[in-house]
Length: 205
Image 1 (cartoon, rainbow, N blue to C red):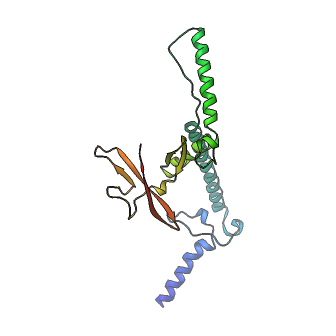
Image 2: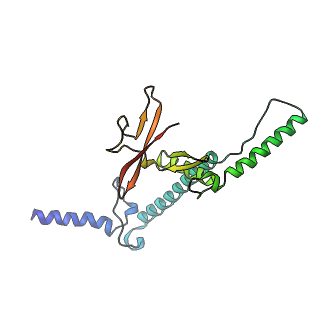
Image 3: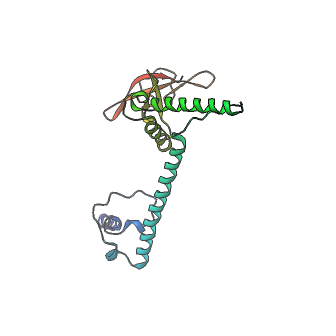
């Protein structure tokens, strides 16, 4: 008898989400994936339909604001234009500064192309810095490795970690520190299926 009652109670709890409208239910637990679409007009009364509509509007508004904030932040920190300012005054000095700015702009434009900046020659400098800052903002950190030819190679944050084959002295975060607390090197692992395997130590300098 008790077993049957528990089974019926489980059915009632399950029907709360499988046959109901989960957007109006207040619960701290993550809900399972919805397998069946239910019309709110047939399931909810007018009050709960209003709650569901308000929740949907709030979610859309919050995600829109969050996406805008992230784009604005990344846009401000990933792109820049170098401008030199010298203490010299006068028309000749201003002309020389203008020439220097133009030369540096030309050099930066050349170096910002895919072939000169990205080690894999896939992204330009602006695209690479955008992805780099987005990874830092969303994941919390990211790695940028200097390669030959002044090129850059990105390293995902989950690849910087400690492995069973990592050298001694590597912290749980995958960082080796000097005695004064400064960073000495990073432990970079490679993906092997769904696991990670030690690859090499990258100097912090």
